[in-house]
Image 1: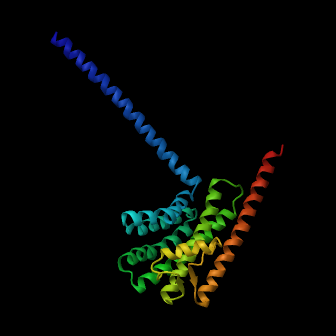
Image 2 (image 1 turned 135 degrees about the vertical axis):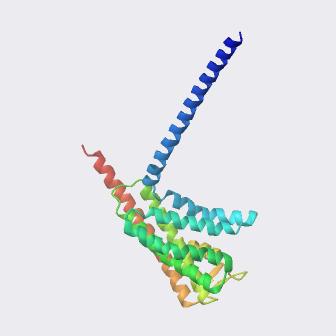
Image 3 (image 1 turned 30 degrees about the vertical axis):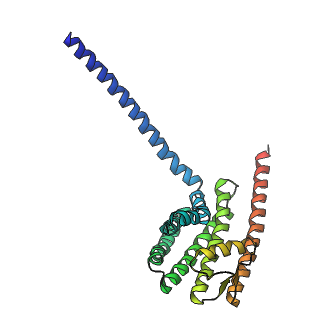
Length: 256
């Protein structure tokens, strides 16, 4: 009797072990499939994560900073934006090397400005961001403009360029205010930090012009005019180009 019970118990354990092994094998197969799918997904949509980070910086960070008082989140998200921007243009080895060289001093300035908030840290932070974002924006624009078909990646790239123009000009405004205090004025309070210039930049880029922040010096006024003009020119050219490319592609597909 005991022998039969032991034999049944060993069979049960063996069956349980086989099932557990099969389940673990299925789980590992799923992980391998996911690992294969993710690189393909990011390769097909190189600008998706960058686009999410940019929108989160605009809309998500103010909520987190106001309700949870996590000031460090700005530095973290902007570091992610910089890394995802490098990934977006690293199809060529030369571009990766140049963007990595630009990224190293930028990441130091991001965290240096977060810690010190000194004149030199703020001016360096803005200056390196202007250089880095100019380089990234130009190459993403060229990459999307050379596309042969309109797909999700191209549309995301076009949106990313528009948002990066807004961020680029926000650092230009921030640098102007740092080097020449009083370049911009606010209706109710003194302008402090980079966040108000992100708001002002996108208000200018979209030609809303609320008037709560106004440029006071000729240089600040000139850059404000340039951003408003550039925003409209970019929309006209990019939208017309995307529509034309889409129409041309659909015509080619319909040909017998």
